[in-house]
Amino acid sequence: MHLDPFVSVDGMPFTARRDDVVRVYGQPQIETRNAVDLTELDFGDVVYRFQDCGRLEEVGAQAPILHLGTVSVPFATLAAFVRAQDAACFLRAGFLVSPRFGLAFVPDSPCWVTALAAHAITQWEAMRPELA
Image (cartoon, rainbow, N blue to C red):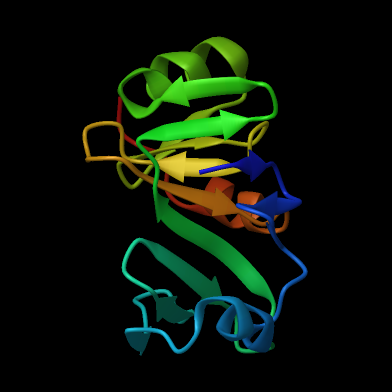
């Protein structure tokens, strides 16, 4: 995954609408509503999630290596990298969330990273914090 935090994921801008994503990827393998009422367009190795108004909320993708500008971080070391580089990172619902890099992921899960739109960070912060 090539992430320009809050700007784009693999070249797809966070300003993209559903039609833009379908134009690039074709029809999704699955289109569904998730538990937090976002519409998911699932293309297998990448999932785009939209609010009802059409605003792109997040992009989840297989990311054995996360590319952030000139830095490449293997998923196996992503949690340590985020904790070292983002003092504001936090845990929610099993996800490590990085406000600096605009991403969320489950450290013990295999290679899925969710890139977040800027407005989504406050929603993650508002979730009940993990118990220490």
